[in-house]
Length: 469
Image (tube, rainbow, N blue to C red; front, top):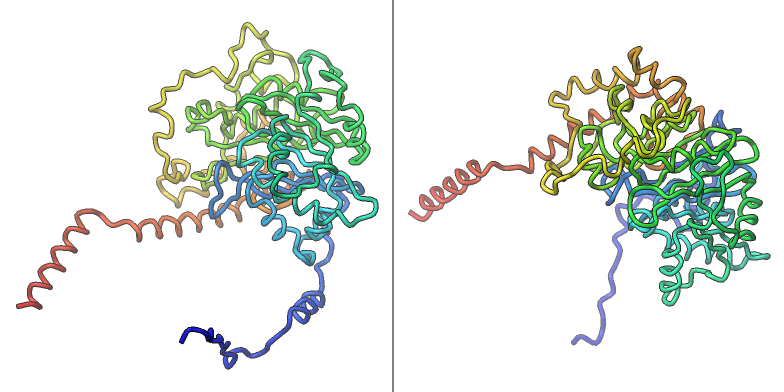
């Protein structure tokens, strides 16, 4: 009776046109690509792929960024889970995404020119996607002649993790040049010329510099978890990129940004929490928005790109003059004024990692989705406009020439894009305003008061009694 499996039949009566896979790909190739972006000549383009913290959400995936170094290749800065999926959507797979005019490569082409994978620390939202990325990089490049090599810069424990995992999945470890972050870190905080701890990986570092056209590459320890690092990349064409990873405001990162003769062209800094959740930020060793702005001012950065936002904060980041000026770290004192003079000594200034004694009961006191203390959504746009569209004189005086932008998933920022960001904030505000109204409406529809639920049960019970009678 069960010897013959029934054959499923597809009802094609409602399908207007059936296409084979080859025909569908041909139609994609026929699409006329848009005209090149006017900023295609930028030497530095930073593309945040995931801009959220901890876990993925509807609006933001976890941490990942790519950098396209014109004429050399690509860089991946952190690689949280689902980074590969995000990259395929952003760059296009198997064909190039013609809507992306900033990085004119498909996902496969990007893998073949990838030069560096950097992991800032060993938290899952920053490295869990690396296995899939390395596996697909190995598959995409193993038939190339000559076979390319990939530099991996990460904490030493990351390499041990890769070695363990390579027993069940081929990651191409024999073609990876591993460099431990601790071996190229900046260790003399007062030196104008950085000093490296040792030269064990001299050959690997020299190769990495040559592959990407870098003048220097340095790391520094930051305040977050054991073996957490910040990164500085200086290119021969003149740009300098500093990436904070996850950190509290700290002197090491300011020193890293100020090392050498050039201030950061772009500082990519985490801004996990809004200012009013400062207690949470200290407890979890993250930065608030105003603290990230202060760090940019402290190292004299030209542009600041904020990322790594808490998944419970849906509004645009906001900062205040008072909160920026209140940020202080060891060796530099108040960071916002550190760009022109070195502040207090180490003994005079308490390190930001211990500036507050946090009670566990105060952490995550309101862990639900947060709208930035906006009680009336109609005033939301006006509140943000006061600092983004038309900053007041005091805030202008503090910020000086610093340009600030907020990162979104699968977006691209050259320095001139960050400069234009403030002129588009009114559109972003409207989008987020509409999203919040929709979210609140959905939450309200899903929420039923206990009293209403009790009344509903009583009515249903009474109706059932009448029907039975």
